[in-house]
Amino acid sequence: MNRVTQASPLRPARGDLSSPPTRAPRRKPPKKRRSTRLKGFDYAQEGAYFVTICSFQRDCNFGEVIEAEMRPNDYGRIVEATWAEIPEHHPTTILDEFIVMPNHIHAVMFIVGATPASPVATSPTPGTPIPVVPGPKRGSLGAIIGSFKASVTRKINRLRQSPGMPVWQRNYYDHVIRSERELLRIRTYIQENPLRWSLDPENPQNVKKP
Image (cartoon, rainbow, N blue to C red; front, side):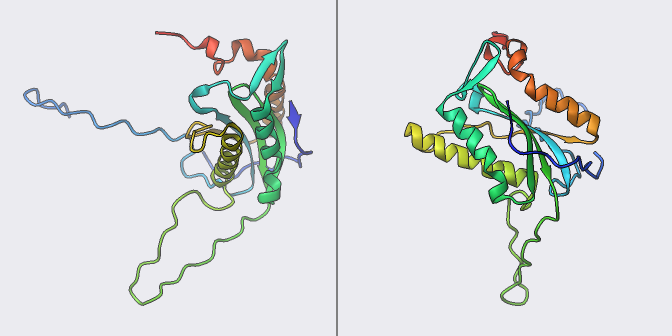
């Protein structure tokens, strides 16, 4: 278990969270990926966030838990070091409790201060539409996590000589922390994660086989 830096006091986040015809049954539309983001919430604003990121296919690539203690391997140490470097690339972040587990990480992160505004795009000629840059807002939680995941993937693939191989699941899970009491509870949960590994739903041994 690691607390990467000393956290600042909690800054609570603002914001709130007909039958088909029988003669010709409709084909079901493809399932849309369910977003784990809080609808309408600005993830670039000041706040405290609890984040969980799982490895690709939940493979235990980052180490193992032995006698209730997490022992990261080379890949796990890359994850730890890259997470600790986040404030160097994103100065509006403060890192709090963190742990790398065999196939996922848990972390608490604060976003503080104003998010730098993106430069205003101007049309080169009248009537030309302004291009829209896809992806998460700069300085937002999504942008920070995306940058972290990409950096870890590059480093691990360089080490194992497997360019282009995925390291992480496509998505991640987040929770907006809204009180000091909740922050303390989440810190304890992260610290005790290795103790609970035998019962952890992310532990492959606990996945029910068909």
